[in-house]
Length: 488
Image: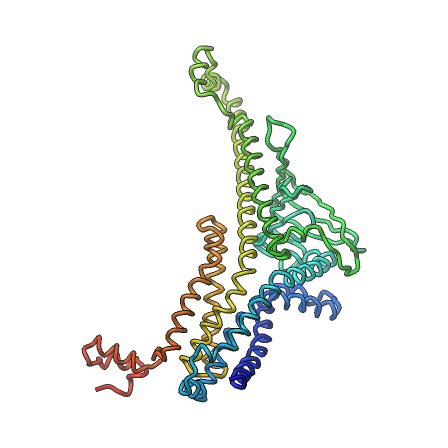
């Protein structure tokens, strides 16, 4: 049995290492493809680019290992079945579980390794890669611009632009900037129709020009006005840059990035962010309650007004000349629009809080779900390999890609759509795919252990003929491959 176990482990190791390399490469390209255009022509040293790709390669390992296990298990059991070795083992009285026993031990070890990589190695590599990327941004500030995505690489601020010019470097359109206070809360919101990002010749500071926009700043000292609004045609922001050289900096903003934290640190971050969100709710509520448009009135305010012969404002306005009415209505409309813009900015801020919490919870759960996926993918892959009995890189690769994409899309859709919008709690949205594939893996393992004819075309042919009472119409037979040559 020891020789048999060693033979099975050896048969698994080769495909696993090869598919792991391929998986890392594919996932790496999927992660950094958006940086390729910006990396080209930036006059960066080759050593820096190799280091950047190396860090990002490590960050893909926690997903690459489950995918490699899925591919290798299908190929290993498929090759054993194709060479009739699996049938010979079963004929000798060895059950499928005993055949897979050494691989189960290996996969369990790989699942613990995946957890260690995901929880400890990936945060460090992500921190190193983001720090290196930040230094690239300091040298080429327009590098960080990406359409329709919130970017937090600027110290103390988050920026989102809807359009980036392809012809002129650093030019962007429809921007919104959230400036953060040292405490982490949003202190000022800036919107602009367009802007431009420029770096000084000596790379000592970065200048951001904003055109035709508004600034909203909360006033915590004044209870009568919850915020101040300023309109501008042109506004300039100057930000010091870390260095003209490509130095390795450890920026404070990276400490708030959920991708660079262990699950213990994520627990603290999620709890802190939820508290900040509640404080933001309370602060906005108090501001609006003190503002004249939203002031709380006592329940008997109408009766009090009648007793004190309150002035009828409508009658006073009606008695004014048309020119004065126009001024009053224009002023009221302007204040209403300002309040609408303020409320919309707060709504965007709360939405950002919710998205941030959902993403942090997603990263917390994936530190456990992807290691568990190693075992699940092995169940699915080994079962399919024993049933299909076909090795090589044809059918196994196709099946693996379909299964992995399905698992990834269900997980991402559950987290990004249902959890981020509050439809499902995080522990359900992030584990939907895991539960579904666990059920699939157990069902396939039972089918493989009982030598079920799951892939036998004759079974499906008999089933179809049974539906048509033993006679298959020629029109249908023509389009079914395994009955094409058996038309009565």
